[in-house]
Image: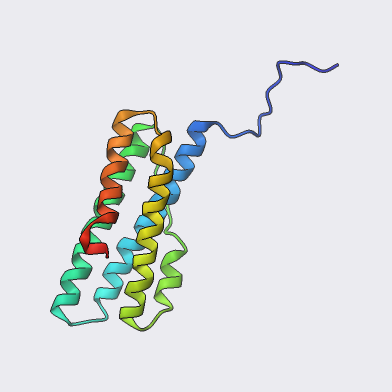
Length: 141
């Protein structure tokens, strides 16, 4: 006998989907932050070091804000870094790596732009708008 009120247990709730998405962004931001530090070790150019430091600051701030969002949603931030890190580090030419990183920044911005209109919680939208601004800033162009 079939029960009409049964709900499939494998379906992911919207809250779980949001948390998974935030964790994915968190891994990407961790990858970006680590990339800036590791790339800075490969140069002694003062202008490039300053640029990498600015980028690192933005990535670290994004990580902090995403961690705060996840904690406020009663979710653990999770661990790991995105696969983007390993792909970027295979690029030995630092200017080419920075171009690749800039594409990654634009990917994060597109993710945020696409999802922001669906975010119902005003506090969460505000946090994510700041993360978006960090990825659209002049230091990422």
